[in-house]
Image (cartoon, rainbow, N blue to C red):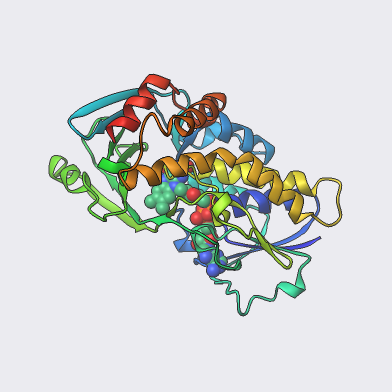
Length: 342
Ligand SMILES: Cc1cc2nc3c(=O)[nH]c(=O)nc-3n(C[C@H](O)[C@H](O)[C@H](O)COP(=O)(O)OP(=O)(O)OC[C@H]3O[C@@H](n4cnc5c(N)ncnc54)[C@H](O)[C@@H]3O)c2cc1C
């Protein structure tokens, strides 16, 4: 098939690599110029899952790992602190990983695709991997995004481990994700745009040097609320259709899982069935809607631990079943304490 992919982020680069690998004629269009292309992300995800996705694409994930986490410290409202054992959460060189995925692919950098002008008629299938932008698809029924930005900093004296500050009412959180060589990402997503924690970080680390400031909103609305997934011969994959875990704004693994669902739908078929793909995505990410409801209820101060126990149980059971995919321990008592504290 002749395939166009808009966006060379995590989903676009992975799909570009795998679809070209099975003989499709793929062209990728990326809005940024090659020299400026930088994944806006804190580069944290599960080692187990990324090893699996990497080896499917012929890459050895060990070559990209920057920091292997042992423990995550979480400061919560009312002076509570919680620690989570990490079981595979790492930071990795996402930029090089995406570049290596694209080695050998046909890619046009500096090309911003627009819905009004993109020549989709020239392709059998056009895949919208533009993430938050969702450029080629119609607007969804019920989008919800949270503003976020971060700094890449170096020369830091802060502790070597993952650290977050959860904001009251689950309205966002501050993160400190260690990379290698005294570098880290520090940033925050915050519906109220106060970004608590960032200023303190710089006060406590006066010698730290800002290498980069980047940002964009993160989509929290899950797939159930991000329909339609397709329009004519255009189909969305990744964050463009809400594949982000709403409690954490974590989208690398969900986007890659979504890519695999798309690839499965293509297997043994000359023309992909968008309807079959839609059903697979809705099934796979159905519990994300429960998690999203918890987040929204918390934000509106309406979450009741008894009345909404079904949602909390759904989040716990589903996360527990996929513990390796998250890269940290999933513990019911800690989860309850955490949801309660926020
Ligand atoms: C500040 C921040 C920190 C984050 N940290 C983490 C984290 O640590 N771990 C995690 O799992 N998730 C994190 N996320 C979320 C995660 O980065 C995304 O959910 C994930 O990258 C989505 O993958 P994607 O391929 O769908 O889209 P993206 O990776 O966003 O890629 C979209 C690509 O499309 C390009 N593009 C956009 N518009 C156009 C257009 N019109 N034409 C052509 N190209 C276009 C963009 O330049 C980009 O290259 C973070 C997000 C943010 C904003």
